[in-house]
Length: 330
Ligand code: PMP
Image (cartoon, rainbow, N blue to C red; front, side, top):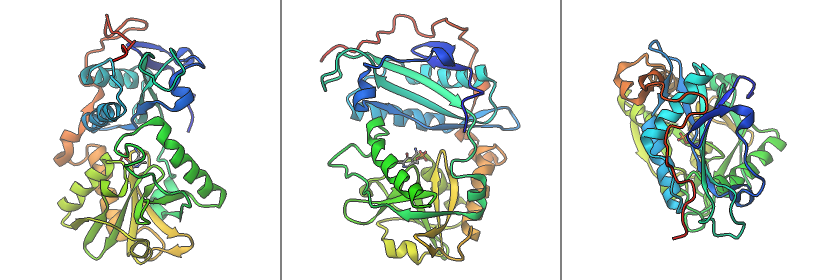
C-alpha cells in the first residue's frame, strides 16, 4: 500500500494537494480518537470507475457520527460528490476511499463540542488487504487474547476512530505471532469478528454468520455476501457462533471492504476443511467480484459511477459556502 499516487484530498469543502491536507497537533481527535470514518472501495467497471454501495457507506458514516453525538457539517449528497471528486481528480480507476470526520483544534477537555468538525476524504490504490495470495490460498489466523468490546462499553455499531485501538492491539499481536489476522471473541467468548472483517462459516449448503448481538460492526460486505449467498441458492443462517464450530467448519472466510472475500485456511494451526479455499467460498468470491466489477447486472444498483456527478469543484473552490465548521456547545 502506498500513498505515492494520491495527489488530491478533499478537505472541508475544498480539493487541496495531499501535502496540504494537515491538521494541528492540538486536534481533539488526535488526543482522544474522537472521530468517525468509513472505508469504501471504487472498482474499475466497463463503464468507468464505480463506488461500491456508496449510499450504505454514507448511511453508516452518519449513523456512526450520531452515536458519538457528532454533527457532520455536510450532507450526504455533498459527501457523495466529494468522494467521486477525489477519485476523478486523482484519476484513479480502482482505489480505496477513506472519508473521515473528526473533532479538530478547539479545546482539550474531554467534551469536544467546542471543537470544529473537520471532514476529509482521502483515496489511494490498495490491493486486497490480506494479499492476492490470501484471496486464493486463504489466510492463517489466530484467536486473539483481546476480546471485542461489548456494546455496553462502546457503540459497537459505530465505526469510530478511537475504538480501533482494540483492532490494532489484536492485529499487532497476531502479526507478532506469525499470523495474517486476528479473530476476536466477544465478551461472552462467542465468535465476534476479525480486526477489520466479519466472519462466515460454511457447513454443507449453509452459509452462517453472526450479528450485532456479538459486538460486530454492522458491515456492508457481509450484507452483500448474505444476498449473494441467497441468490446462489445457499441456505443462510445468522446466529451465535462458537470456537468449536469454527474449528470444525468445512470452510470459513472473512468479509470486509478492504479484505473483500478472503478464505481462512487455518486457525491457530488447525486446518479449516482442507486448509485451502473451499468451493462455496470460491463461488461466493467469484460472484462478489462479478458484482463489484459490474459483470453481473443483477447488482447494478450497488454501483455508483464516479462520472455521474458534475465536476463541480476546481482546485481551491468551495463546494459548500457558508458551512459552519464550529459546532456550537449544546
Ligand atoms: N468489522 C470491522 C471491525 C471493520 O473494521 C470492518 C471494515 N469496515 C468490517 C467489520 C467489515 O465492514 P465492511 O464490510 O462494511 O467494510
